[in-house]
Length: 138
Ligand SMILES: [Zn+2]
Image 1 (spheres, rainbow, N blue to C red):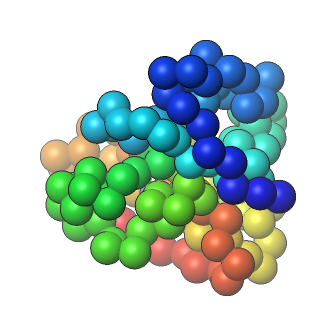
Image 2: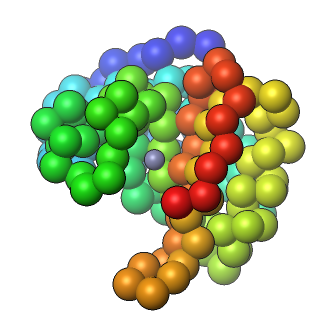
């Protein structure tokens, strides 16, 4: 699968998969262009179909400048390469969503679990398509 470049202005409403549009992966600073790896969108679509519930992408592609403004973000974050998305599935726990993501990425990819805790009302799962297997809880 390949990394694709899109324009937020031109392609924002374009469907990458039946349930995800280009604009959902846009950098939260509103910048153009947007980079999205095809495999990442396909994984999110599989998660959407498995649970049958809306999946909200809270962070997709990030520009270097925007990434640097996020406290605790890795300077070499997979979000910089269009390979990562942070998401939550409506009505589904972080543990349950991450456990299903595990079945889609056996032996590879990054999965980070960010469960709700004090000061973090909603949790999320980080998913990326790096070639090596990496797991963590944040
Ligand atoms: Zn992330």
